[in-house]
Amino acid sequence: MNGIHIFLLCLAALFVLLYALQPKRPKIAFTYLRYIVLALIAAMVMAPFFWLLCSAFKDSSVLMKYTFLPPIMNWAKEINLSNFRELFKSQPSMEGNVYFWQYIINSLFLASITTIVQMFFSSMGGYALAKYDFKGKKIIMFFMLASMMIPGVVLLAPVYKLIVNIGLMDTYWALVLPGACSVFGMFLFRQAIVGIPKDLIEAGRIDGCSEFSIYMNLIMPLVRPMTGAFCLVTFLGSWNNFLGPQVYINAQSKLTLPVVLNQYVGVYANQYGVFLAGTLLAIIPPAILFFCLQKEFISGLSSGAVKG
Image 1: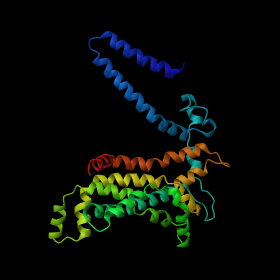
Image 2: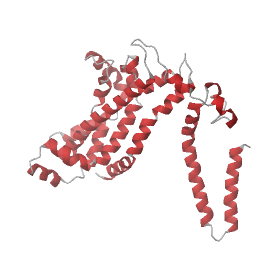
Image 3: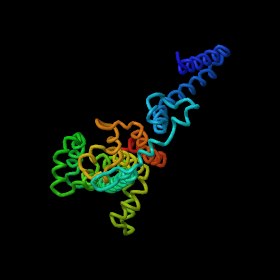
Image 4: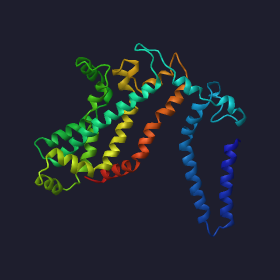
């Protein structure tokens, strides 16, 4: 029996004690139990992140020796910044020395551009599907829904051949253009825009607004929650994309974080401490974006779920 088992037994014994002291008022005991269960679930969720944080700062020689942190008396020699120093060392390549911060900038740039492009075209497509009636609209929507059932890996070979033929290999356009208009995003925006009254759009037309001005100044401000939710989902998808940069990008200086981090753990290299330090840095930008857009993310998805 280890310390964790003893701690859990003490918590259970305290619940039994509270219930035994006041059997006619069990609310106190069950309130305590509810908070304990929530605290344990939160601890289970946060444990991997705490383990990652500890592993990033542990010396590589004791990485697998302790589950979390070493004893306090060993902190001076077993906790250091060696993993981060190794991570930010220059790496030789065909283009010269490359530094880890360049990969961070590459991922930020690619994820931001992909998010902006997809948000622009998907919102315009969703606006057209929600507020315009045109011939073949139902057929187009059926075709779009059917295309979502095709796995992206199935299209990898023809898309790769197309990218090679138009000369976009080893450029970020090869990653941005194929997914410039997301079918998933178009239907998300359609669900949000369909509930906007048509009278508002007609009033804008009477006032002399162009169709693009109505889209930018009337429609987009009203679907801000959905915009935040879509931007967060798209940014995370592009930030974590491994297959695309691995296939279309050849230059070492243009690679993104998921591809580079994978190079630290493989057949010829097992730098797990450096890998975990890079992973810790890689989760910071998405975490910041999530906390900034948390309210829009929740309200955006919930509003899109209830509108027909």
